[in-house]
Image (cartoon, rainbow, N blue to C red; front, side, top):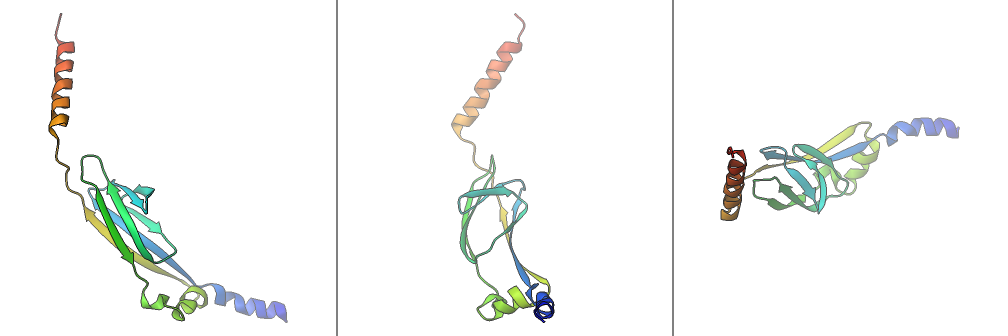
Length: 131
């Protein structure tokens, strides 16, 4: 009898909620940090468990860093009571996907960087001149 009850109850434990933060950037290939931990490069989907506020940082050489605090708010079906149904009872996976898109601006070039490039160009030119 217990085996029969367990077999009948098993499909009821199949529910699941997949939570994803989708991070996109223009241009792509920016390093993504969430709460100080490097996750990967854009575009990417980041799985998470808990709702709340996160800090997302995007870095890419030659572009200004983007640092933004984002709120991950639960949908209505994740409030206490309803979450029992979506997390445990439903026999399929529900995806809660939140997308953040960022446009990265080019970083200004400093006078020191320009001077360094010109210095290296002069050094290379001097090495290539016949002696």
